[in-house]
Length: 241
Length: 230
Image (cartoon, each protein chain N blue to C red):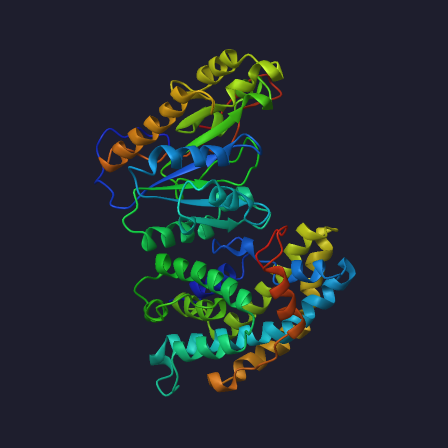
């Protein structure tokens, strides 16, 4: 169950790197967002990346070939057909990978963990990441944001990706962003396109702000929760939050 | 440590839901299936593993258990380092040593969280490198008050269950059949526990390795479409 109490006090500022998760279904552009974060931030921050692949280390190889970080700062964790488990109930292999990178490249500012492409219910445990981005894309259908789910509703940031493709897939991107915004109770939504430098800059700014808040001891990791809102036979709809 | 806690400790260590990263490991089954083994071969594979690497691992876990609590056996004449070396020498495949190290670190992490001050946890930390899975298992078991016999049985059971549960992902059948394979291994496991307990020194650690599986693991490390590390 998600932690639901509100923190108003400040925590002691942490000394380790901020751990940022990027989750979302297959093909929405998670790896590209990792590459984008590296391009935007690697000049000013010391970064490392952990990828989770269902099959082998394809995402890690993509990022290495993209040349956005030194290859030794990109580590692949194989998830044994359990991408959901690896980021949620048994995060041990991922934690070991993150701790290895933090030790090897100390002091790191930011470690980005990419989930294996799973489904709409997969979100990171706060035991693994301090903050998480959930990614959708317009090509997945305009109604996905409206359907909701823990990542869509309660990830620290929701990205609606590939907005430049919207006219070609018959989706109203603005409508999709509006649906997402209304599902998120004020949490931020970012419409992102690699062809829109301003949106890319906003992604970088969001990450900088989370890091600032984390370092100030003001950021509290939130669990988006395991359950999507669902309807009962009596017609009531609710979320387990 | 009460008997009740040790009893639960043994069950915990044998539980596939234990958060130690076991999800990355098929106990060599995926490499075997990729080389042409079929679902019908899985029960024989499971038994063959128990009698070879399963025994080596269980005996190493027992020796690690003894080395981890020197007070219990002050004249043992060997340390955890010796057990780790003896087991590594019986694991000629580098990818298998690597995955055993990953699983061992998962267990070590658990021990650090559960019993950070226990001498067995301190000994495991002092090893100073990734402990092979059985070495870590012996130490965490000792730290939880699990006896040597239960440790050996947990090691063998975990190996059998790793095969059975990976089979359900790689070549699925009725999951009750997979449970039946594990249960059918009872006579083997009972006999092997006693063999494992008889190893008195790392020099006596059984060396019943499985060259075919070692070879498969070397091929598997270069496979680009795999689900499990090994």
